[in-house]
Every structure is written in C-alpha cells, then in structure tokens.
Length: 305
Image (cartoon, rainbow, N blue to C red; front, side, top):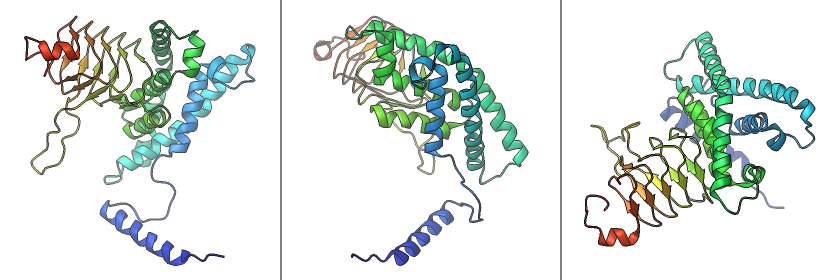
C-alpha cells in the first residue's frame, strides 16, 4: 500500500495558511466560519427559484392546492438561511473595523427584508425575460420549455436575484449567486450590471457583461458577446480604481449578434443592430446597422473603429 507523508504535508499547509492570514490581516482566534458558504447560497437560490416558479421549478410532487403553503414555507427557510449568510458577509467586510454584533444583525436583517420585499418585482421582470425568449426564438415550443431549458433564462434568474443583493450592499453574496449560474451556463453576468425588462440571451455560452454595463429593455444578445471595459485606470499607487463607469450602455430594442465585442463607456443607440464578430469602441447611433462590411466601408470613422 502506498504511503503518504500526510502529517508533514498537513503541517506545511498549516504554515501556508498562517502566512496568508497574517498577510491578509485575518483573525487567528478560534471560532466558526468567517465568510459566506457557496453551498449554502446554492441551496438558498434553489429554494428561491422554487418560490418564484413553484409549479415549474419547485418539487415534482407539488400540487396547485398546496402551492401557497409551499411558497410561504420555502421562503421562510430560504430567507433565514440568507440572513445567516448576510451576517457572515458583513462580519467579513468589516473584519478590519469590526461592528457591534447588534449592528451587524440590524444591517443584515434590513437588507434581507428589503430583498424579500422585492421578490414580486423580480418575478415580474423574470416573466418579461421568459416571454422575450419565447417570442424571440422560433425553436421555442412554449414558455414552460423556455423556463425549464434555456441557459439564458437561468442566468437571468440568478442575475435578478444577485443584482438585488448587490444593490443592498451584499456584493460578495451577489457575486457567488452570479457565479453559480456562470458555472452552469458559461454566461458571465456581473451582478452590478443594470439590465432592463424583457432581455433575451440566446444560446449564451461565452457572453460576458461587466459590472457597470447598462442594458435597456427588449435587448437581444447572442453567444460570445462581450460588453467589456476598454481601459483600467489606476490610482497613484498603481492599483486598479474600482467602481468607475467603464462598460457599455445598450439602449432599448438593440440586437447584438454572436461574437460581437463592445468595449468602453460607449452607447449603442436604441434599435441598433450589431452584426456578428464586430469590434466596437465608439458609440453607435440609434437605428444603425453595424456589420463587418459596413466597418470596412464606412465613411464615418468616428462611428466605429
């Protein structure tokens, strides 16, 4: 039987952890978990999806006559679990300047209460996304098929939940919720991105939408589209500056076809159509039709380059 130097490796890993914790100014006091759990949040999101769409994403044995009871019970479980994770995030984010336990509990409770109150609005937004997918894809047989099968819709469910958490001052929880969908779908939606009603991400694999992107209503986006940053400004010490508007603004009724890359704080005007595999770093006027051919022959070099 093979022998492994487990004790020696464990000691070496202990030393590495100590070095990391010292460098990151982490507490060495004994205690429980210091930060949120990805697995716990995955369970919360599954419960929330069931509460939002009980007869489609809830348990298979659910019947209509017990739907309201299931939703209430599931919400109660999910929100209490979310509260525990919110408290962990607030402890983590204030680890260098600790808050009193009562203050942590108050802030976490207020955030989760606001999140809970926003769920009916979230459901209405998701209904608009489901309808946009159904009407935007001739292969869609029903709205139920769209909700159960389409990766773009799954990513939007996670994004709507994550964006609510992000706005309420829980960015780490939001990012974990977003990354759960990213891992399943290949669609990378930063929870800070503002996305209007009725957005359809078709196929979706490889789509990247950055933190400060603003997307209007009834926008359609195909696979491998990037709404990214063009530059990353640094401060006097050379560190990246956080939170600056650096991603595109996409107005209502825009279509962006597969492989298009749009970089920087540019505006894609309402009703514009962006063709596949184009590279855009300047604003596009409303109603424009940008293709590779138009880029090669455009008389307006300031439009797109």
